[in-house]
Length: 284
Image 1 (cartoon, rainbow, N blue to C red):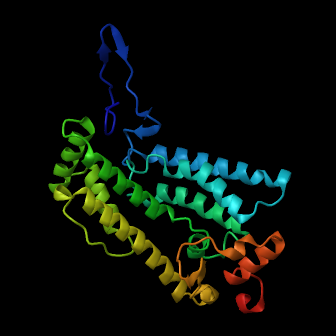
Image 2 (image 1 turned 90 degrees about the horizontal axis):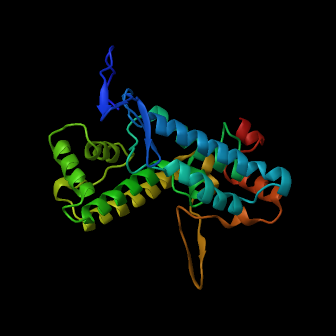
Image 3 (image 1 turned 30 degrees about the vertical axis):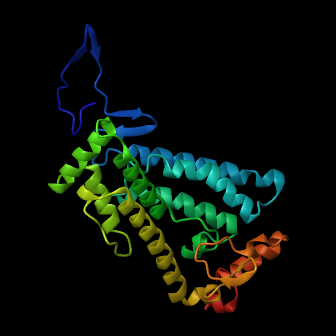
């Protein structure tokens, strides 16, 4: 595999007496690389989005045999069968290009809308996550990438992966293309500001604090969307049971109304609360 545009006349490479063919695309430990594309992971995005979409359709095809899946069961099937495809290799192939990333995101949105019985065109995105306790894919990818960074830092200094990380950090420090520079790009393009430490001197403790900051920022951002939307006023100031203590507010929580036994009643209630109904108020 030759990185970058292939020459008009390909050179010949030999391994002993056997000629080695030049390839523009290969798969290594489940991750597809394309050496001729600007984003070397573009084929990996397309492949995983297609597989996740196929699995999503297979999950909901069960409804022809068992009836409509309740939201709780649908969400568990999502986490077990669809989510692994959507996060596969995300700690390596960071989300720096919007177009391929949107394909993965569309699969998550489509699944959750179907699970909640919502319209695929008019329903808002924030309630898909605040009402099911599922983290938006964007933040989930960032958190997994930070956990991978923590893992690499903890490796012995003579391990190849740790050496590669140090080289990547040095390249990023000089402003050169690298995994570490892509990670900084992703962190600085979140919809909220982070207190970013120096990656060259960051510690496992600092990474854990950054992970908590991303999680907290994601919840605050979603709650801000709920609080500022005139369509979602019924979702504001929700309190959830807390055992023997006072009810408390949780931004990401699987809401109790999604467990209404009658599926038609559950779907109707969900659509009213999420303002995805055909009442005159909504049509106007």
